[in-house]
Image 1 (cartoon, rainbow, N blue to C red):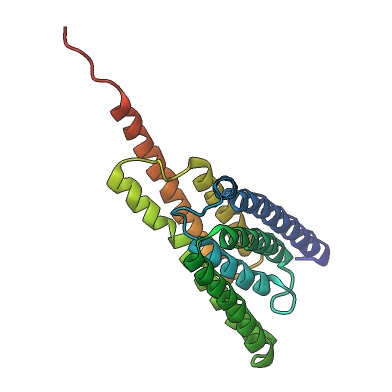
Image 2: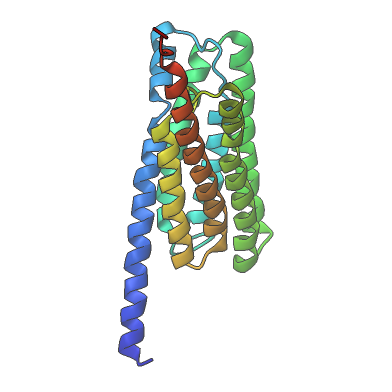
Length: 236
């Protein structure tokens, strides 16, 4: 391959990876905004009711870890991973703050403790990765932590899938949320493949597979829900 052909191929890959990364950012933004109706209800009722703050605590930790992995201090040339997770971290912090403000005293104390624990864990990861590892080992250390965090996050909808199967209802599985998760995972899977970064494409490949399972489950049980909602024909 002559130098000009190599440069052209490299430029095409770079453009394609940027397109995939930007698309992933956009689909992730939809996901980050999805809890807004829940928090509008919390603010309106001035109560967290039976809602749990744990998903937002865990999402905050996940975003912070993946943000750290995407920064040049750890992994150069994957800035779109840093941008999506910086936006995600801001959203999750806002949600957690609102939850703490309107929670009952016991929940308030628990959530404050968990929030401090998240910042403590993140600070520890940053300090250890910077002080104890050289650049290559740092990439592996933070990469494996971020991959484990992402895989566990993508696996969480399995509980919803199980609920849908048990109840034969898609009430608790919003279609557009499942679709956005699938499209975001596909986008970052492509981004990771084009960047040859297994810490990006492996967890997002798993996320895309689980997202596809969600969509198939929704399609199947949505059809059942419609059929069961029809009134039986009357014999004349």
